[in-house]
Length: 230
Image (tube, rainbow, N blue to C red):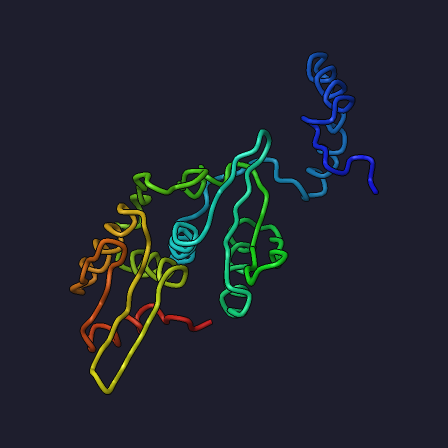
């Protein structure tokens, strides 16, 4: 068993004392390593804004729908959760994460569950995506303003949302069509409704979902966002 089993830097008394002493004296024992990694291009020297694109709009949508950004003292972590059976989703958004952050994400199964997590550590993730860190439950979510400027961005944003929290059910014998985005965050439901109406659809708004119920609209929107096509 490792000596550090069950401990962190903050909870192990000896390591905590060393850490506090080095911090007080301004000693950075990783300085040379960081500079070497920066010279090799393994650590970015800066974190410029991510270029606006349809791929970024889609990524913002999927993160808001089924993702989370955590904040730590020196870095941030982004996680997108997925059903382990949905291999296309996992592959697609792992590739998109890699493309956006120029870094290989970790893709791991959560022990004892059917959940896969796509995760990545990097600085200023929240600032560059314009998505707040922490739990968004009950909070008002402000969608990046640039997404509303062009229909192609709105379409991509909605694709991300529906890929994360969307479902499609068609029962032809009863002529029942239901293409919905389900979420408990009111502001996210309002953003979904806004986007659909801008694109010319007539969504039905419920307390925890926004739905398309007309056959032609369901078929048109499914084709527009290429739902579940990876």
